[in-house]
Length: 473
Ligand code: ADP
Image (cartoon, rainbow, N blue to C red):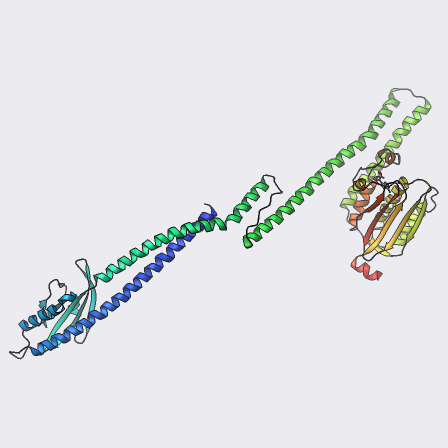
């Protein structure tokens, strides 16, 4: 069953219950009040009639000193006639509770009469021939006789009123139910609109449309739910986008890897085939064997680099307090006496939290790349400066430079700007990819600034840890 129908059904049941029960109690309350009033009037009437009887009895001439039965009948008739217009009935009974006078239509039942005692007034509601009466009874003490006076007051109208009251209430309840049902139908549809919108959005997402968002139609809890749903959808879309990019990157990686493998392998297989199938002169023999050796070496270097990247991705950094002096001394030892390029070292002493061997690999790669991109005789600067939140390393060259678009790609594995030039330097486009992985372990990243024809500057910041920063200040 639809949620809106459930709301509708609940509201109808609730309205019916409230009006039904409320109406029942209201009509019954009015009925009770009317009956109490009628009862009081019936008892008062009994008292008045009793008093009237006693007064009339005093005026009757007594023959034997007591009131004769015939006189009782006469008084009863005159009392009834004086009250006929009001439709009240009476019965007068003697000491043995045997009827002396009874109005026409008075009930023959004497159960109330038997309960009458001296100085008491009794009453009851009776149903007689489809009509309702209040029957009252009391003892009359007149001229040494103890007689009984009973009256019957017709209260059928009160009962009829009650039945009418119930009917009116039932009709009113049905009308209200119909009206509230129509209203609640629209209210339920309005209340459940955000749910419908959310359901449609969720369905679209399930069908693969991750850009779909639910429109927010209220600012209440449902509005909050819609906002949360949309936020979740954004995160999901972003994650799926990331996953797609990761898959694409992996596919690119596999394609590039296969390509990088295929080229040297084809050459190796070709030269090896030539060596085994033909007799070559010494020079050609040496060249072929040398080609197989150098390509083999390149493959070995490539596989080692790849291994380094894979290890770096899974590596848990063991950062130690490292003096940057150690790193620069190492670089000076390698490049200080370089005759081809003019190496400049400029740095501020500092202690950083890093794994020295890994940072050496990064700096060596960057310095090697700077050399590869530069013409002999130009300068390569390796610098280190303290910054507010970390230690900044920079490797600057004045070589070929890289275009803006390529700057974004050169950190991808196997990407080479100039393939033949890189290969001639035994490169496979893996050096910077390895640097990125190592820097990621140090919570750092590579920043590249380059102008084609003017040179490049590769920088990275090793952040100070809280403890390290305190020591440095
Ligand atoms: P490789 O190991 O082949 O050198 P890298 O990942 O280190 O590969 O570099 C990727 C590519 O980025 C290189 O092929 C090169 O063309 C380019 N590159 C890297 N450093 C520089 C630089 N300082 N100046 C110009 N080009 C550079």
